[in-house]
Length: 212
Image (tube, rainbow, N blue to C red; front, side, top):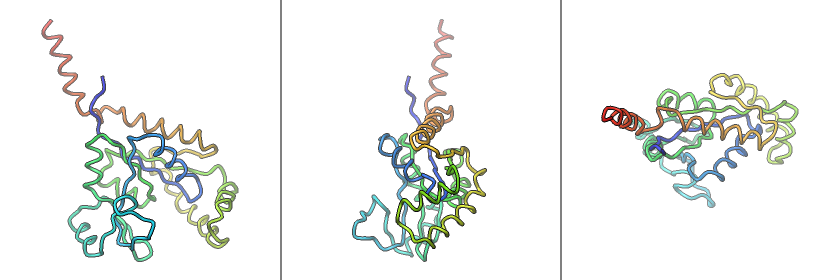
């Protein structure tokens, strides 16, 4: 029997270059039940961005009101712009049985823990070595030498928080790492507390015994 299921908030975090984005893309592309978390932001919309798909673009007063009213599950300021996760959107998806994929850092993860820990499963991705991490950052050819050095220094800070996550995966092979995250998500989906109509199903089984 398939039970009505409450969705899972799947948080994947890693130092830059460890493979978080590649794993997230593989999961999202292969499973229609996984939805991406769409943040609100006060940043100006770029020409190739779509409102409601990449971000919900709002002004600062609207953002501040959402924050005051408790409508954001997590919030951050980056380079003078605000970013946050709308509570209503997340709750709607979870109630519909959809899983939500979050690509956030440890600070955002800790904020989510405070408000919705029971719905979360968190995974931290580590590189097999710093030598390999540097090589991956260099292969991307997106950053200057100075930026790569900064990302490596930030990686040290981020790795200090590995023990705040439910699972830790060393990303030696992308396919293997994706398979492990899928297994983690499959396990989270089957947890007893996620099966919404399980109690009524058990009661029905008990009533069938009583009627024998």
